[in-house]
Length: 178
Ligand code: THU
Image (cartoon, rainbow, N blue to C red; front, side, top):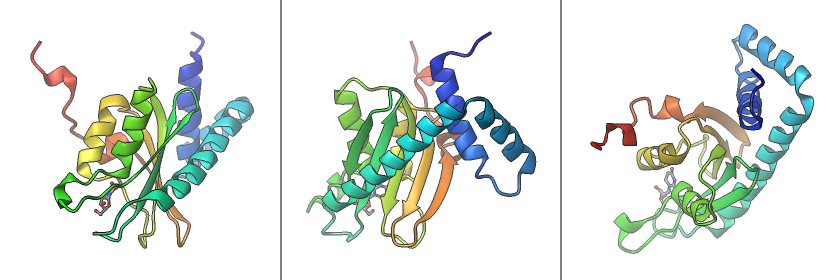
């Protein structure tokens, strides 16, 4: 059966991840083959991720992090290609701090976006940071198959994870009593 447009986009995101898996030549080879068959969709996804990186770097400039001195910028790529930005917002009552990821998610949801292809995260840490545990669970609510791309802006080092790698045993609505 012919895959839906949504499935093809998810396959392109998978190919983006797979070609970057050093040490897995068979995976990379099958991703390269997929890209040859769907070059336009792949190029589109790469362009959206590049735009999301720019958007996340811009969000980093808006972060309010006077207490930790640790600004974070985020951008979510919605299924329709739109980008939704967030930054961390700290508070003198420290526990009320909002993470960049949840800021981005709330901005997307208020604009009726509830399906996402990828999250881009940037910080000035020495190495790319993964989303915190609380954000993993909240992201799972809307995007269980999310690709997370994190960049350490100073070194340009990047890392990719699937949300399901970061949150292998999620709590989900399926576990709630009806
Ligand atoms: N922070 C985020 O915004 N996202 C994360 O996933 C990790 C932590 C923020 C919260 C706080 O403002 C600062 O980084 C230090 O923890």
